Length: 144
Image 1 (spheres, one colour):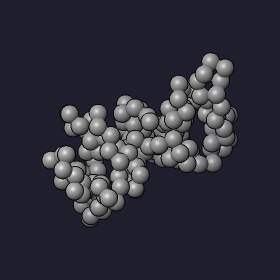
Image 2 (cartoon, one colour):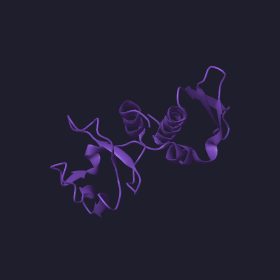
Image 3 (cartoon, rainbow, N blue to C red):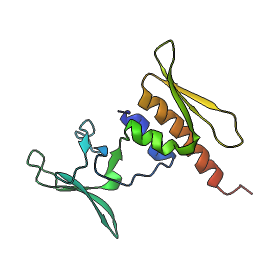
Image 4 (cartoon, rainbow, N blue to C red):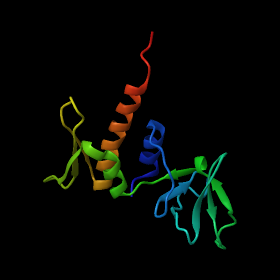
């Protein structure tokens, strides 16, 4: 699982979350930010309203928590979700001789890039962070 710090970087770079069953997240409140929650129709369910998405805690007696606004939650994408988000840019995942993991991505018209980390999900996350940041930069209007 990626760290809260890396998940914050992804969110701040522009990665958007559409809560779904099986997603993991933390609540960005002191005392709860170390507790990882999982969305499940049995206990935590995403409710979409005109005013935003609310994560409802159904029948949880161990927490005095009914619901939390999506903006107060931080998505911790799984390895498969990170790989899927890389889409057609993803070329390969390999383990190097030093034990680190390397993700190879390629954007059209650009040289291949390699992102290394101690775990596969962190390598995917670093590659995605670069991809999201590049997409945001390309979407910005040019300065006059």
